[in-house]
Image (cartoon, rainbow, N blue to C red):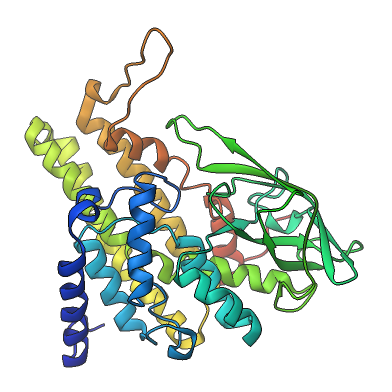
Length: 395
């Protein structure tokens, strides 16, 4: 694999750098890379930054020109995400809309749906959330029980979703629902687009040990959406939902490896300042993490070759998810080894509240990464059964 830029790619990289140099100033630069897809840090500043990206078509960079994008090829998408991460630009707030829903819409949507939704994503007028997990359908997504029944020109939706990231900020939800009441498993599901601002939708925040509440429960009680708001075919939503997960593990995380690399560099710097690198065990742990983050990069590039060829990622995308989530969780543990006793949390005696620094928060949040977007156990099953062709696990 040749990572050297062609002349055209070098020119594009220069264009990206020049734009970032010109616009990443003031409060945008001060915010840095804080926040993330599941984090509200610096939210208002990040919204304004996202609008700036959309105005200059860096939001939607891969979309066809006729859909308002730049028609960027795969190499250009990689370059943009690399330079964005290197510049320490603000974390994106359109992750679910641009990163997950938009590529799924481009692959399965009608022309009318593309014309309706893509411009609002690019202008940041409409944010999206993902209605997949349920209390009894998390890792086993095929057990979805939320139901939708057609009533004239509208679907009527009843059920509950959980761990719905930023649902309280979103105007729309792409929601996996059971539209065939006689079906079970992955059959009879549809991929509905549901407006969040209506009487039949209730959002309840779930507060975490990090002190934040960006995850939510969402209750649908006779909520409605238009009959036309189905992506793909009715009762064939499993295929569409799996495509979204492929995008979640594909280009949506192109810059993730660089962000992890920067985080590791910060940890190594802290280790040097604290003298922790004098400990041979800690030195070995940090070296192992350094090797791992580069393995992540090369494996990710190999995996994304399939995206270029097929347009969507297959089950091999689970390899990347399994690897990066376990690598980051382990890094969080190694951060605590570096900090030692200083990694502990001191709570206020009066109300039990506590403040977290970025390393403490990274350690806590990384514990969830082997669960969300598909648990490690499920990823191993997918790799074994659908990539390696091993016998299915007994059901």
